[in-house]
Each structure stands twice: as C-alpha cells, then as structure tokens.
Image (cartoon, rainbow, N blue to C red; front, top):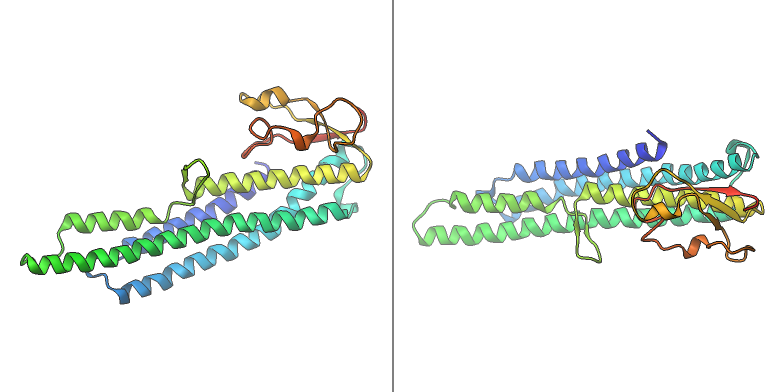
Length: 263
C-alpha cells in the first residue's frame, strides 16, 4: 500500500469512527422520554466527538500534505537524476503550495464535520419536538406512552443524521466515508503533482509525461502524453493547466507526471 493509500485510509477511518460514535450515542437515547434537558446532555457528548475529529483532521493534514509534496519533489529529482529530497530544501513555490493545500484540505474536512454536527443537532431538536407533540397526543387519546412505530421512526431519523458529509453541485448526497476518501485522496494527489511541477520548473524543466496504468475511463487517451508545465514552453504540447479535468487529474484520479528535460 502506498503512502497516499495509507494516509487516506487513516483519515477516512477517523471520520467513519466518528459516524459510528455519533450513531452509538443516538442509539442510547431514551426516545420516549427525550426532553430539552436530555438533549442538551446529548449535544455535549456529540460536541466532544466532533471536537476530537477536528483535532485529528488538523493533525493529519499537518503530517500528510508536506509528505505528499515531498513525494512529488522526490519524483522530479529521481526522474532528473539529481538525488534525494533529504538533501533538497523546499523551494518557495512548494512552500506556498504546502500552505495552500493545508488550508484547502482543512476547509473541506471542516465542512464535513460542520455538516455532520449541524444535521445531528437538527435531528435531535426535531426529535424533541416530535416527542413533545406525541406525548400531548398520547394524553389526549388516553395512552400512557408514545406508540412503538413513532419511537422507531424518530430513532431511525436520529441514526441517519450523522452519515451525510455534503451535497455536491449535482445534488448528490455523499456519505461521510466516501466523501472523505475522495476529497483527501484528490488533495494528496494534487499536492504531489504540484510538488513535482514546482521542483521541475525550479530547475528549468518545462515538460513532463503523464503516467500510464491501463486506465479504462477518459484518462486513457492522456496516458503517456507529453505536456507542458508552463504555457510559455516551446512546442505544440498541451499545457497541464488547460487539460480537461473531466478527463484527467479529476477527483480520485491516480495519474501522476514525470518531468523530462526534452520532449
């Protein structure tokens, strides 16, 4: 398993464990006797879970983004026959890229945590209101407790609230684990590629080839192609910044680039 695969598995587990912990707290709720006071206690427990997740995400970003950029630099140095990253400090472009990728990745993961927290709190508030209404109805109808079907519905709503990371522009609702896997894998690959580009350009190398691994999707037509790393490079080669993102270097894409001195 590559470093990126291990890193993605680690952060995905952090978030899926958070979902499990939230669901466990929801399952322990005494739905029939849910009140504002017990709801406040539940909010505190969930707040601890989300706080722990945010802290873990920040630590993960601090460790993995620089490693991804260094991996990209190392790829450039090896391709150019120069040497090891251990002897090569990050150039200014890669220092700036590292800071930007850290901020962007944290913003993406923070959005997931915030959405989980918002949805679970909304579900709890709705459950409290539903319970109070059903308790009133039970009193009017001469029943002592809320009926089992209502309790089951409220419990199901509470359990489902945690596992929704985000709704994308196309209206697709992502589960937490799937979204975190996709977004972090994409960020790490982008950081790695940027590390390669910046190191190559810093050494006057303006071209690269796209990796090949037998892709079956639209990436296939770009495999092995020579590209420019800067639009000002001579030659009739596509510039990496102009490549269609639906076809290559898209979310979850595993293609990388290898710098070459002459196309």
